[in-house]
Image (tube, rainbow, N blue to C red):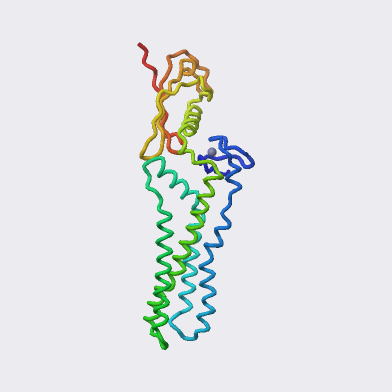
Length: 269
Ligand SMILES: [Zn+2]
């Protein structure tokens, strides 16, 4: 089953709205990041083209193994980063809502881009200063500067594309569930009531207290379950003896996944 990107719950294929958080799932389905392939694979393509240049140089400081290695590592970096925009987005929002570290994507783009340029300059200098016949150790030093050029530019360009995609996503798809306390509360209560076999109707509970957990972005809720709900018979049980109302403590994580439901009888005076 597909996973709702807003609340991490499952929904049936073909649905327009997530049954759990009621967000628009079609908006997410329309989004693709296919265009991110172009900047991400550009450095690998450049490394491949540069092989033609090196072949024309005859014996030189470059060894073809270095190009193949840089393409292989660049592709690994690209595929490692390509699927991560939703995770970056969640981390970015998490840092605004609770005590989560802010992802430093801009810093990473700048560092990898500057690193790529530095390595390109170093390689150029090494190439210009090494005249054949070249020693193995010279090729080794050259390779250590040359291969990272493509790897670092792959990281910089892919992260740049992710950064652009994140700005675009914020305008097009719903915010993660944990950003909106009201919606997180609604999902949490719905899930907790389900586990207690209580119909999700507003007159079946009264919210006494709501607190967000600043360390994790989770939520703590205290409910009063009025008398008529407190004796709700369990499934397959006919017991329906009248008792007093109950207090219910609920704790859920930032996606509204309930971790704790504790009910205790309301103390009567
Ligand atoms: Zn959802």
